[in-house]
Image: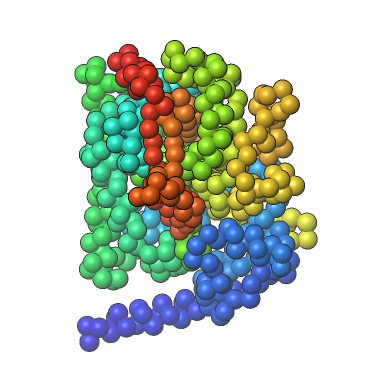
Length: 530
């Protein structure tokens, strides 16, 4: 008898699931692969490198590919012009996010900027971050970025074979220092480790958005234990960790401000500018939220549902880790480009010092390499999903309210009309006849960090971090292919991992060595001046 209520609930869920997911395709909705009853196109979705499949499907279905997965209508946008019109010009209409009831209600992640629905809280947090991460404001963090780039180079000098680990550590250190004024002194930093633990637990939940509570949001009012004691325990643990990440670093900032030991940081800036004469901090919860999401992103995983494999949304920190891996790989397999960039740096500095941000205007080829990195292997080949809040039309197409839109950024950056020989790494495509940085119709930085009112607010900070790190590495090190026992080059695997938070190279080996003894000495001298 005690099992009867659960059996009744299960039967009700089955009938509700069939009803909920059996949606009719409205007139004018884009064509796409023919799906199955109930699950729709769930089994049509590729398990890896989805953007390549969507690019191939364009030959059959065109610029708009319409699908349904578990009752959710999805449109793949293969047209850059449509993205500019819909997500940019009509941005208010297309700025919503998919429902993630499990994350928002059971885990308590309802404050997270990337998954917030369109509304007042989203606009509050974006306004707060814009005052700290605008192009002008981002320059105030250049000293910290330069310092971390030099520390990264120091680790490359000591342990060159651990370059991918160093990239992750450096990126986490940048975020923690800039957001909370917290210096990461070792790889096993308490806050980074806690965020990584949360990330690991997140990965055990299966495909984001596919849980019954996401399909039937009203289920959140029931206790999670209806899905098993193990599941309920994970929910409780994740909620506890998330509350720690949300509150404790912020409270440490307030304590350090009180005792005068705080390092300048975003949290301090926001607290000071929003403290009333009474001492009350206005919009404090929003301040806590937008700072917390900045550093939880440092461990790579903020999830969104849309495909069978799951599309993961990343913030600027994840971008930087993956972009650094791609930079090392690109320089290793293109020694001529590496040497050309080094020559530009040598001609400007004569080995007297390391590059600084003030040198950026005089080193356009380094900028061209960075733009080509964004284009050649975009970190987010599929941009974050958007959702429309009202019915809308584009040309002959009709999109019902609640449709999810996924821009195929990879296709936009590999369009042969704008980027001839798109599979090749050619920084010169961004250099004009006078040797200066060229203005191009599709600047990769405007595509790589999202669209419309959901663009990554940290993109200028990430771009600055990438530039100073690349310039420092090029000035100091040679990056070459490893050798086998017979002295022959070991060719790297150019495969990229997909289905993770971002697209990044699979683990690979390379040789990173100082260009000369003088280079190593210059690095150590620069570190002593910090």
